[in-house]
Image 1 (tube, helix red, strand yellow):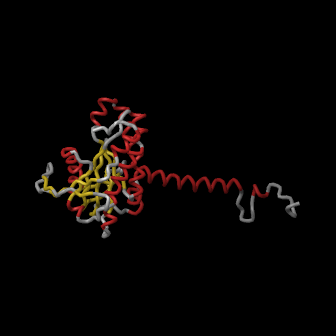
Image 2 (image 1 turned 90 degrees about the vertical axis):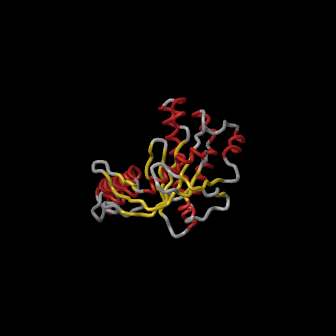
Length: 266
């Protein structure tokens, strides 16, 4: 005998605190349901939006210093014509899923997915090395996509190429909407970053950053900064200083050649 008295069904019906097994299971289920709902809500609308709803952080417009990256897939219109809209949508969805890990690894916050474009932000800090996370994130995405080249070639017949613009400055952040709330980012910084992403296409560069951001970051040793150019951006009177950023050690084409897949889509 392991016990002095038979247990019977007391362990099921009640204990000394008046708790029954069904009640314990019900409480555990309710707690897991609440935690799961909060987690999924955070994933759906984003942690900043969830925090704002709970704490009221962005109920009124707030000015923040932000590093912003606009990153989009090159040639997506042509891909849609060649592959069909459903197939290219599958490719874009896969691409966004695959680049989520590099973004998270560098503490980036995805603000929005817009068509074939993703908008990522970081807070500006007093540490120049932290402000370089956007640069490191872009080239980590490049390496990640190179490592997945065979999979994309097999499933879609192409490997997506992408480009990005990076800029830093003040951003107005506030809640918008009622039935469907979201955080909206306003200001010249957002417009400039979008134009820098467009400029990448015009000059056939993968990554272009503004001089405003360059002066606030520590450039990693494995990156090369292009000469400064003063350009006029569409819809903006004031010119802006920009720099192309490259990684001298080629990653994309040699990696794909070693893997035996086709060149990247332009």
